[in-house]
Length: 155
Image (cartoon, rainbow, N blue to C red; front, side, top):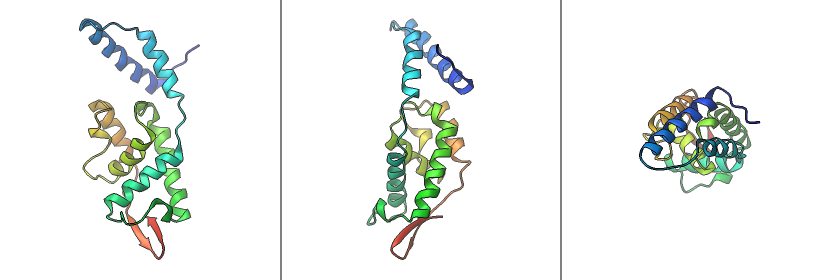
């Protein structure tokens, strides 16, 4: 039995509306398949380590520390960043279904720090979904990368 909750229903309703538009445009596919696809993709496990790696790649790149690598971040920075990513995923995962772990990590860094690019301008998300995910990112404080001896830290 398929069971859906609040934000899931909003997501599904949007896809059913797109289904109706597609049928009127001559494309024929089943709304039931949309629901199956949704439940299947929603069960996809997120790989926190991949998301974190690409979060750090974006952090180094935007901070002009691209001569460093992701293995130079302090243990405390890794733990804090993982917690932020986990919280972000809890709040937004229903909206991120069509995005890879790499895209999520990269765009979480860009959007939370207001770099002028991010979830709101991804082709994979419609405008409304991009705005919703961006607003979730904005609840996280802006952070910066610093060099601290032989470690990289984010504060």
